[in-house]
Each structure stands twice: as C-alpha cells, then as structure tokens.
Length: 240
Length: 240
Image (cartoon, rainbow over all chains, first blue to last red; front, side):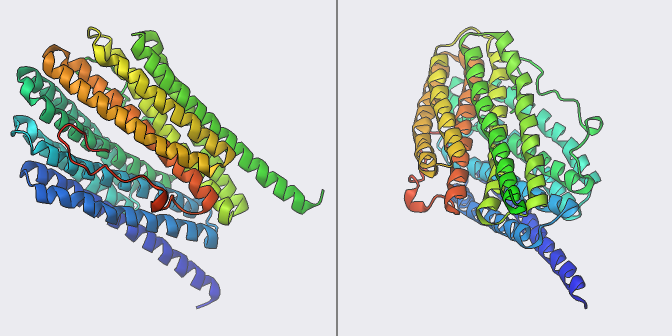
C-alpha cells in the first residue's frame, strides 16, 4: 500500500466512524421517543424517570461527533463533498441531540401528567409519536446510506405528522372547553404533542442535510411541499 | 507589506466580516422579537404580518455565514482558536436563525390571537419578552467583544427568564380554569410564552459558544447554575 492509499483509507475510516456515531445517535433518539411515549401510555413513573437519565448518552455522542469533526477539519482540511460531510455531521448531530431533549421533556411531563386523573386524548399521542418514530427511522437510514431520494421522501412525510398534530391540538382544546378540570393535564399533552411535532421538524432538517451532502445544495423549491405555515386559521396553531 | 502580513490581515478581515454578519443577525433577531411582541400588545395585524416576511433576512444572513465559514475552512484550514471561531460562528448563526423563527411564530400567533377578545394575561408577555430582549443584547455584545465574562453573566440571567415564564404559565392555567371561554387565546399565549422562553435558551447557547471561543471549553460545572429542569411540580412545566 502506498502512503496516498493509506491516507485515503484512513479518511474513509474516520468518516465511517463519524457516520457510526451519528447513526447511533439516531437510533438512540428514536428509542428515547418510544420509551417516553410508553411511559405516558402506561403511566409508568419509573420508566419516565429513566428517559432523562439516558439522554446523557446522546449528549455524550454529540460531544464525540463535535470532537471528531474538529479533528477531521484540523488533520484533513477536507474539500468539496468531504467538507459537506463534516459540516452536515455537526448539524445532524445537533438535530439528534435536540430530538433527545424533546423525548426527555415528554418523559418529564409524563411524571407531572400522572399526578392528574387519566384524560381521554392521551391515546392520539402514541399515534403521533409512531409517525415521528417512522420518520426518524427513515432519515437515519437515509443518512446511513447517503440516500437523497429516501431523505426527500421522509421530508415529505412530515406533512402527515403536522396534520395529525393539528388534529390532536383541536381535540385537546375541545376537551378542555368541555371539562375545565382537564385543563392542566391537557396543557401538558399539548406541549408533549408540540414536542413530537418539533421532533418531526428536526427529522426534516436531517433529511435536508442528507440531500445537501449528496447534491451540494438544499432541497430546491420545486421539490418542496407548498409552505402552509403562514396560513391563518383560528383553529390551527401556526407552525414553529 | 510582505505576503505573510497580507495573509494575516486578510484572515482578520474575513473573521471581522463573519462577526459583522453574526452581530447583524443578533440585532435583527432582537428587533424581530420586539416587533412581534408589539404586534401582540397593539393587536396590530399589519405589524404582525411583517415579522414573518422579515424573517427571510435572517435566514439569508445564516446562509451567508455558512458560505463564509465553508470558504474560510477551505482557504485557511484554521487551527486552534481560529477553528473554534468558525465552528462557533456556524452554531451561533444557527441559534439566531432559530430565535428569528420563534419571533416569527409569535407574530403568526398574534394574528390568530387577535380574532379572540382581549385576555388579561397578555400584559405579562411583554415583560417576559423584555427580559429575553435584554439577554439577546448582552449575548450579542459578548460575542462582538469576545467577552466571556459578559457571556457568563448573560447565561445566568436566563434563570430570571425561566422564573418569569413559570409565573406566566401558572397565571394562564388559572385564567383558563376560571373562564373556559379564554382557553383558545390563552393556549396561544402559552405557546408564545414558551417561544420567548426558548429564545432565552438559544441565547444561553450563544453565551456558551462565546465562552468556548475564548476558553476552548464549555462552561465548567462549577460556573453553571444548579440544574432544576428535572424538578417535578404539578404547577411547573418541565423545561424543554
């Protein structure tokens, strides 16, 4: 093996290691979401307390990614696609870290929710989280395989999540109006649902970064969904 | 001037340009927050519609920063503090971009809120936003001057914002329970308040990055406030 081949192989190894760390973050973040929602469904305080503790692992992985990215920048001075890889790695790791925070927040709210009597709309939340979980599976696989088409498909799935969120939001408002004693638990459910919706937004950010790695540009306008976030409807919360 | 001096001067110029873009983002993001809150206070739909439009400017500046950072990485291969500068620039720009999004979201919700009769707790929101605006002024100045002490002081101010947010959250829940007709507007106020609280979190991220640029490490544990986010109290929303 000549030295040049050695350097190439070693760079690939470093990129593989970075990819492995980030895919690991993605799987962990998805499992944290599932665990948080299960804690809500089962009113399981012990399970709910475990989620914020496990969030430290995701935070640690983000630190590892940052360290490896800086190391790569210093030692390799990457160009073109290689540079996009490391810039995107930083961004994607930051999105997974936020997703982990939202899952931890849901679990913390579950502990508060469990102090109130059970309210009916709890059951839509798992459906919402299931769609978000599938979105996470897709964007993580799209990143692992650097598959821009899969990333784009996942990006469009987020519309479905937004529609479900809007439905849950309406149902929660109706429920609170019908029975004001449910205002406190329903408010926590509102914020939990919002957290799941935000997880979807971060998943779409990840999809955008996969597209950016492969194509060297953001998703062009003609491949984007129509932007409905500015639409004003008293029953619809404006998108964050 | 010898070539080496020329290169040094030019690198400094590039860093100054990057700093100028980011300080510009910070000032714009703060003005957007003020404009959004004024639109809520004055029930001014025209002013509210302007905020999301102006958010494009912040998004454009973030694109400029990303482009300049990539350019700097390619041409300069910066090391040590210079590398921290560019990595932090990316992160700080991303935080200001999110702050702009939260301000735009508040303005969009103002349009929805203005379709309901005026509710009393509106008046706490400006106080909350004032503290967040001061926090933004401080972290932007800390970044401009690379002043780690000022960044740390701002970082601690976020506790005050969190306490105000908790107070507003409680007041809104009480208000909804007392008069269920206010549930829809109060829910929008809840999310607006949450957006301001999140702006504070992004301001603390910026403070952390200023500290990182100057000291080469995150804020150490003994300089951090006690983490109270895991405290469980039925009246307190868990921190995001």
